[in-house]
Amino acid sequence: MKRNERVGENLNQALHRVMESHEDVYLIGEDVLDPYGGAFNITKGLSDRFADRVLTTPISENAILGVANGLALTGNKPIAEMMFGDFITLAFDQIVNFSAKSVSMYGATHPMHLVVRCPVGGRRGYGPTHSQSPQKHFLGVPDLHLFELSPFHDNATVLEGMVELGKPCIFFEDKVLYTERRHQGGPVGDLFSLEFTGEDPFPVARLFIEDTAPELVIVAPGGLAQRAVDAARELFLQHEIACEIYVPSALYPFDAQLLAEPVARAGRVCVVEDAPPGGSWGAEVAHQLYSTCWDSLRAPVRLVHSADSVIPTALHLERDVLVSSESLELALKELAQ
Image 1 (tube, rainbow, N blue to C red):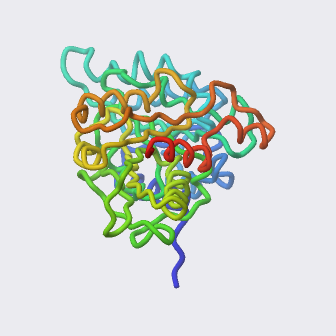
Image 2 (cartoon, helix red, strand yellow):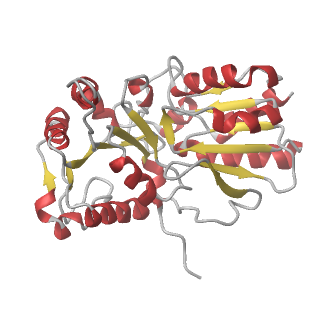
């Protein structure tokens, strides 16, 4: 029986495919050349195949985005890699004040085919400066689109969609997912079925229990997906509370209409994320769900997020800060009461 590929392998093959099919796609970042192939081996093999379009750089995220912006502004399709997503703050000015604004500030719409890849998240013991989830700092920037890696979506489709969008995109990639197996149809674990809702290239993954009406809806980005599955499984087996889980690829702009029917049917919804509280993606989704589903909600939208803290290096302290399947299960149980 052929094993499912790992998420990192799928992302690597997606990069190979998009560079093979687009001669104007460039890859730029620190240590992306072979044989190293990037800090997580996601760019492995690319510089051997496309030597003149894979560009390694000094340690300067601001310069990486500056070069990428120049390539995009002149009609190319650069993919810039941040070695760790924490360092994207060093390129904040280039992304917010140049990448995003260049789409509309020249008197006519100017396509900016730019993708910024960002390995993010904790649960590896990398500490406060290499474990953050900075998605919320880029919400609400006109013409800037945010996406997240998931274990359910085919990255070739998602990456092709971002490259062709014509607006700058940030692709947040939970580092833990790189070594996880990708789900390619069929059951997820021993309980959930998988299907997609919405249109390609950015549909929403739906995980559900066959022939069972859900009492709760969970909205979780890709990095939280497995923890949401584990929590929902225990909730069903221990308390007979059924959940449906929705995993979007596109984080922002977010279309709450895709969830209106299932949220209205269940009447209770939980949004979970790895960021600390305050001005976050989860708060934006909750706001949209209130506006869309107010008449159908039987309880306030529940937000589950990390603690209001830096992320410790020691694993036992890190576990106290980040969302776990156990803490999520407890929140879901409270919401169901």
